[in-house]
Image (cartoon, rainbow, N blue to C red; front, side, top):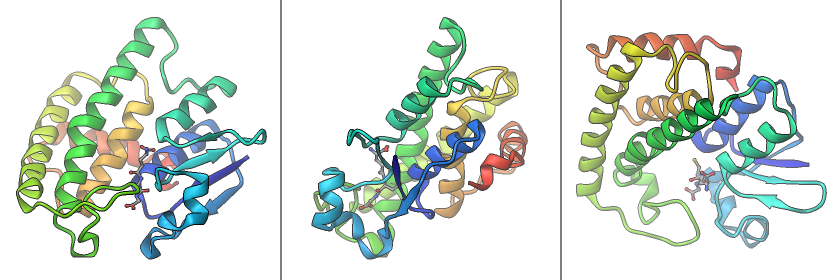
Length: 209
Ligand SMILES: N[C@@H](CCC(=O)N[C@@H](CS)C(=O)NCC(=O)O)C(=O)O
C-alpha cells in the first residue's frame, strides 16, 4: 500500500488525522505541490485528477479522494468508529461532514485560491488551469464568516460536530478551521463555542499529523 501525501496541504492531512486516530501507519510518498509535482505526467499516471491525497492498494487499485480513503480504512479497521456506529450516527456523521465540506472547506478554498499570488492561474486544484476571480475571494470570505457563526451555534449544543462522539466530521472541520487561520481568516473572538471545540480537538495527539 502507498499513500501519496503532502505535509503542507489540508486534504491529505484529513487522512493523516484519520489514520492517527485509528493507530494505522501506511508507507507514504511526499508529493511536492510547491513545485507542481502533482501536474507531472508521472503523478498524473497515478492520479489523473492531479491532486493529493491518493492511496494505492497492493492490488493496484487507486483511491483518489480523502473521504474515499477514509471509507476504506473504516471498513478494514472499524475501531474506533469515526464514521458512526449506529444507523443514526452514520447518517448524522455523513451529513455534518458534507455540510462542513460544502459550506466551510470550499468557502476557505474559494477565498484563498482566488487571492493568493502564488496560485495565479490555478484558482482550482485539478488538471485544468482556471484564472482567479477576485469577487469569488470576497464571497469566500463572507461564506467563511457565516460558516464560523453556524459552527459556533452547533457547538453550543453539541460536544462534537456530529454529536457526542468525535468523528470524521470533526476532522474535516479541524482541517477547515486551520486552513482558514492560515488564510488569515481566524475564528472570531465572539465564537466561544467554536473556540472551545477547536482547542479540544487540537489537543488530541492526532491533530499533530
Ligand atoms: N479529490 C480530492 C481533492 C483534494 C485536493 O483538492 N487536494 C489539493 C491539496 S489540499 C491538491 O492536491 N492541490 C493540487 C493543486 O493545487 O494543484 C479530495 O478531496 O481528496
